[in-house]
Image (cartoon, rainbow, N blue to C red):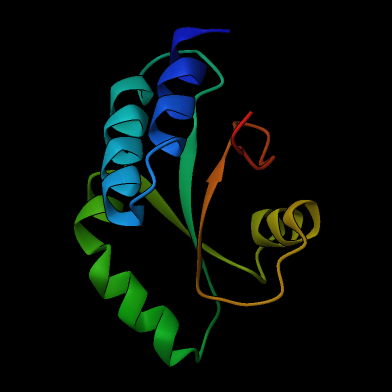
Length: 106
């Protein structure tokens, strides 16, 4: 297991959601400039969705810093993410690898 994968799994083992997300933010930021298939935090949204706007505001700093990417479900990338992850509702924060596959605990 590569170091970024171990770090991600360590974060996912944290039971408190907010602490786990904070841990994942650090992992994503740490590996953002490397050439590994790093984890990505994605905020999945759609136009006209009030909760999506609220989540965008909540995560505005992470989006601005490049720690989290905002992706519209109607974009080509958004459609791929929805299909691969069987998404039914937005907004959603997802942890994905570099191929838009979900990362879950092992």
